[in-house]
Length: 137
Image (cartoon, rainbow, N blue to C red; front, side, top):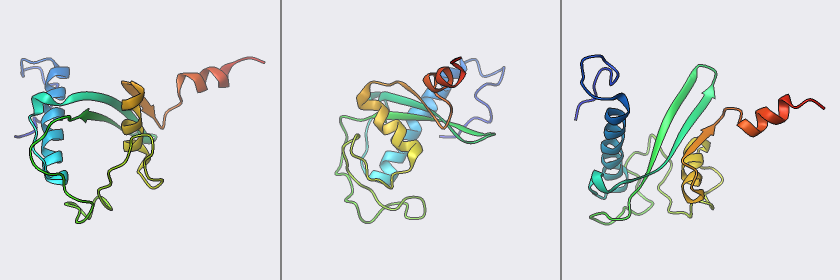
């Protein structure tokens, strides 16, 4: 699979959202195979949440999180991790009981799923916080 130079180009004939979602689903399936060691059909992945993460001003990203309920193969045990330079180890944990050292941005996406939150801003002011800060006393 090759990533398009720009999914928003005028000549690609597709809506940007469809192309972006297809790319993310295929990437999720590939990453699961590489990091966890199981294969699954990308068509069976269920969207779980989208996180709009702001690390610092000018450094924002969108993270798409998916749920797989069926797969082929056995998930790797915690050791060895397939990508030790990028992650400490693979840990199986309840979404609401993640280890304290879980990176906050992925933790936001993982925690959003069981709550039914489909969009989770992370690192931005929430609408509630903005309303509280601008409320006149």
